[in-house]
Length: 420
Ligand SMILES: [Zn+2]
Image (tube, rainbow, N blue to C red; front, side, top):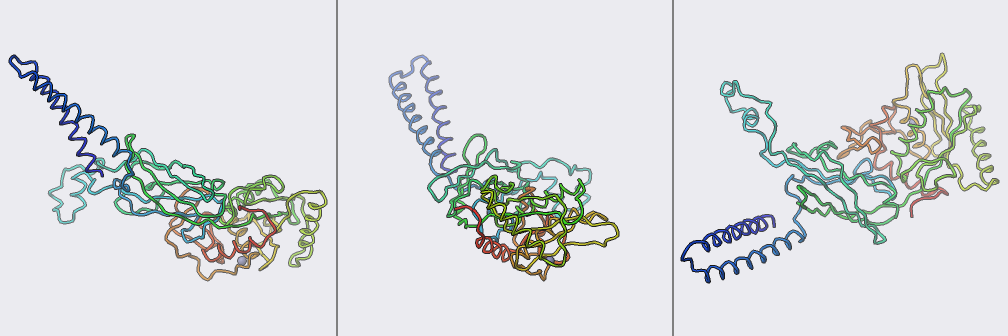
C-alpha cells in the first residue's frame, strides 16, 4: 500500500510537470496550439484521476505500522498473565523500535568489532543518532461489549531509538485506559492508529480481550492501642493506594458510603482501641458492631474486612503483621526505627491476601513476561511476590497470577457492589 501510494504521488508530480512543459511549449511561436491545448486538457483530467486515487488510498484501511517497527503488544493490569477484571485501570502498549540502520556511520563503525580502532582515531562518537523513528500521535479505539466505543490517546516519547523489544515505558506506545471506561463485564476490541506529520501511517488490530467480573473491597481500619503519629497517616493512605493497585478490583478509592463505584472503599476509626492480640475476639466484635450501626443508620456499605494498624513502640523490635487465613481480620504495624514505610504497603497487602486464603509464597520472584506498576506508570525490572516472607519494597511487590485469580474468586463471594 505504501509503495503504491508513493508511486501515485510520483506520477502526480510527473503529470504536473508535464502540464508546465506543455504550457511553455504553447508560448513558443509556431507551436501546434490546438494539439497542445488538447494534450493539456487530457493531462489535467489525468491529474484529477490520480488525485482521486491518492485520496481513496489514504482513506483505505492501512497496513499495520512498519516504521517504527512493531515488536508486539501487551495488555496488562500489572502482570500480562493476570485475568483482566472489568473496571480496573489497564495498560495496552505496543512495543516499537527504530528501523535499522539508524546509527550515524561513525557510531556504526564503533560498534563493529572488526574495525581496527586506530582507523577510528579522531572520529567523533557522540554524533546524534539520525533516522530514529518518530511518531507524532497515536490513538487506541476500544469497542466495548454493549456496542459503545471510545478512543484513548497514547502517552509516548514519540522518538524511538531502540532496535529490539524494550519493556521501558519510554520506548513504547502506551495507552492508559481509565478503569471507569472498562466498567462493563465482557469482551473489548482494540485497534491502534499511528500518525506522523498529520497522516495515518499504520493501523494495528490488537485483538479482543475478555474483562471479567469482580467485587469491590470494603475495609474498616481501626487504630490499635496507641494514637497514630501524624506522619504515619500518609503512609497508611499510600498503602491503600497500593492495595487498590494490587488487587483484582475496579479503579477508585473512596470512603465507605460515598462513591459506590470505587473498587476500594474504606472507613478509618482513629480512636485507639485494644484488640487484645493474639485473641481475635474484640476485633471480630468490633466489625460486627460497626456493620450493625451501618445497617441501623440506613447506610449502604458494610465492611468486608477489618484491619488494626499501629506504629512500632519504643523498645519493640521490628514487627510486620498478622492475618486470618481465610478470614476477615488482620493487624499491621508500621515500623519507625528504622522506618518501614517503604515496605508497609506490602505488609498490608500480604495480610489481606491471607484473608483471601493465600499462604506464603515459596519464591520471592514471580516468573512473568513483564511487570508494570500502573500506580506510578512505570515498568519494573522484576516482579516480587507480595506473599513472600520476609516482605519487601512496595513498588515491586505484586500478587502472582494464580493468587490474583484466587483473590478475585474470593471477592466474588462478598456481598458487595462491582462492575456488571
Ligand atoms: Zn504472612
